[in-house]
Length: 257
Length: 291
Image (cartoon, rainbow over all chains, first blue to last red; front, side, top):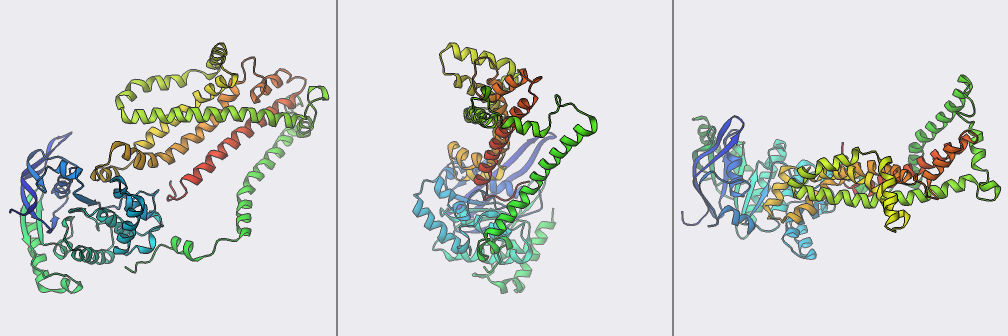
């Protein structure tokens, strides 16, 4: 694929542990197009988080080639090509919500008033307009995770890495957050490329353009399921027979190995 | 987006500022156990004198101590002893504060260096620990005499002794705190391509503050001990250390004086600790309750 923004070419990752080497990823080849929403799904130990962390240069591959926007992941990280959202919000508890959202801009040397305005704009976008002065411990889990998404978007990265961002939320909050995320993603002029790690099948199908099904020991790509549900997706999407068919297809993909 | 904020936030936003009386009653509730403990101690003091027949020499009456406090010093020409004690306490407090600041800075610098260069930590930490195993009572005269020979003013030596006891808890606590950030919060900084200095000041340093204050509280009392010990070697003219030394010499004839000196030492320690605790509340007030 010529317009690939992320290109895995036979990537392997081997950890050295006390009980000998452990293969976390084996021979993974995957091409992700610019603006695509990719969900990575699989049981624990299938290396889906590792795959995401390789893109972020938080870990290095043991073998194979990985290019991010045509560069090494290291260079892409230095160029601030991606924003990351973890399963827990990882807000700095000594900073107000606004100052948390400003953190990346502050590190990138943006002047105070400009980043202040940008933070407020993003907080409104994620529905936290009134909570800029609050501190993280004063917000619920869902609100904290919204703040962490605002923080990741603050510097308009080309790629958004999300590692089970809604995994710790209750089902009701979770479905609402999925809709909101798609709203933000669809809303901009330029769609951000998203890699979304999850262990929820409906979540993966609801959000993604393609669901990458992975299997463990050693972690590898089992199959890639294209999701042809129309966008914008809505509450009704989850009641669409096509949605159920795709959920079944992903579930079967997870079963075979 | 109609998610409700937590109750704590709602009350903070909607309820008016608490009226003064509730502050007063809260202060009373906090003070009551402290006052109660003092009263209980005083009762226990006199009761045990009565019950076990402890002589005035070993445990003077409370009245005798109060009387001694109000007696003029220097054969009736000087201040009353209470004022004299407060002046001495103030002198000791200044030395302790100087030592606390100098030692705190040293402790902070050592922790920052050890954080950045683990090889130095492995090489130097045994000596740092060893330095704390040497009795301060043995070192104080050397430092005082040594600095005296170099022509430094007397307070320099005293501050150094106090600093000697202060830096160690700060180094240990601070180092632990600097290493406390979670792997994910470090990954976050890495994802922004933050420089080591940015990681230090924006993540490691704020994370370490609760640890730092715990060790500063230990250091506060240690620096008071250091200041008192530094006042013991001959030559010092003011300070609680001097008072303890002289009143111990005359204990047989005037027992209350030593108790007053001890009270003075305790006062310095409590005030110092209180200041650090207050600073802690001001600095880390916005965080969630820890522990």
